[in-house]
Length: 281
Image 1 (tube, one colour):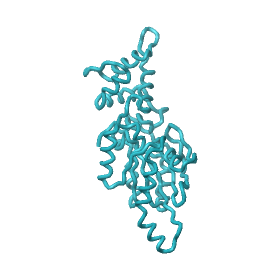
Image 2 (tube, rainbow, N blue to C red):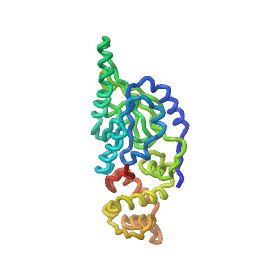
Image 3 (tube, rainbow, N blue to C red):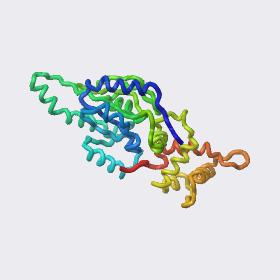
């Protein structure tokens, strides 16, 4: 299943970031905590080179708690200020503002020593589509400013938002990279909702997702769907078991695996199957 999705506005977004990077003090990079490696755009390092960086592992409430800590330590070891957050509830968001203020403390002190009383920190928010950037901004600002939706590609232009006195955030559209060299990365991006469902084969995606979960956390499938899974079961066999257990039956007593496929993908995304991280550091 070779997934590629790179609409025209993403090329414009790369140019937008490059044109505006000189205006910001700090770059806050949001990563989906369920795919902290596959969901990290390699272009960001180039576009934001030389800027102070904060990595926020967002949607941490949907990811495995133990792996959240491992990934947090992983990025901290790479030299990034790293935080865990949940944009929907707002948990951990204030820490990002505090971290930015801490990173800029020395520069602010120098500016104030020169007589500048009101010094504003400007931070740019970057990340892949549907990682929660706009929700992050709205929760941080305490009001609904940035447009949000539970699908990728909603934000199309930059937005400057004043979060509080002395702190502004620049929202940017989510960007992927032109070609996914790693097929598995494309699957994980699709599974977490970073790619539009309209271009996906949800049935095949569900099979690949079942394969991954069966390898890393098979008990989650067993517990959620109340099914027995044996070592020999392939993903399509497991999907049929899920369909029959849920009562998804078509005429002729045939299992409605297409309906079950949609259920599996939706319930993974909402963590109803469990808090699952699809990769380890």
